[in-house]
Image (cartoon, rainbow, N blue to C red; front, side):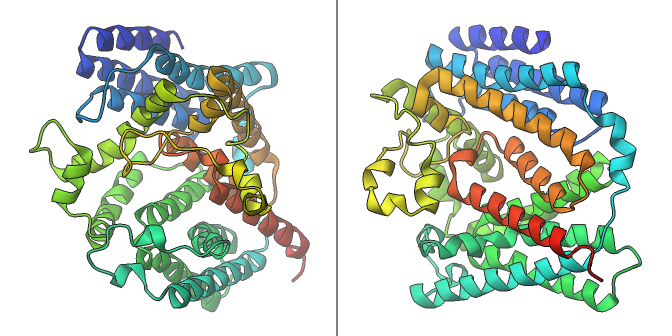
Length: 429
């Protein structure tokens, strides 16, 4: 923590004096130190606090580089909020570890988890069927498949039917279920079921490709990998690098399929260095500009929404947004209309200012601690999928407002329902 505070103050001062690159490097160095400290302490590549530290603080460091003309010096309140977002999470987690322990004394026992794989295989079948059915319904009603459309950069953005699309994108959970199935089946499952699980997983991964949704494809793979890591006693970091290399070609193909060519992207990103390769520019802007959007909101927000904006999933899932449109009538403040991704704390500030950011980060720290400890006592395999989802949100904390996003809560609900299904059927042979 001392290292972080020193680097943060140094970054703020360097940025203020016009040295953006050193300012960013200071935060990236702090992020790596924090992650490695938690990795050495807890022995997990996907420790929730470690992931959050690396990607939230590291993402802020990248944003400090100011490689785009869209980026500007941040307001003091923005710097304060970014610090509070990290400090609340880290300090609550640390306090709970010191008082109640980390739970890692049960590490070996947790890894020995096993159970009846049959209900998990049935869940793979059910979820894949429902997701594919909803995709077909959307394609028929809307009259097109995004992958087959040319010259329309936002084809996927329009490929939505209210309510149905949540089920369509639930296919991202299938690869993780398959990982759980093979872990539990080890010598007890049939060859036919194993082949069926693989085929269904391929179908599930084809749905985001047909939707040309790069995020959904990457998210599905990340969830599966995180689920696998959580089940292993040892996992070499090199495997993660190989996974990233394998995903790059698919990501680039989907970028081309969305009609996002280099000229189109460079025109949106407005990079200062026009010769910057697009494979560097695109991920950089998808990380850095989210912090810029937060700063834009801080500078122009006329009034706080007092919790209404953060409760959007409630208004959406209950249908209240249709009866009372004013519940969701809150503008999004971004520095460019095409770049609408936000940070995880955007809505927290929108609702209650810096107090909202601090309270929300403290709640996240509490939830992360409880999940990290309780998962070791669970005998329901769906708990590993829940952990993988939370880990993915910590890793992508710079990307969007995960916990005021309806899809996030739909995934949580689906995971909960599958956990209940498993509990009711696990003992049946």
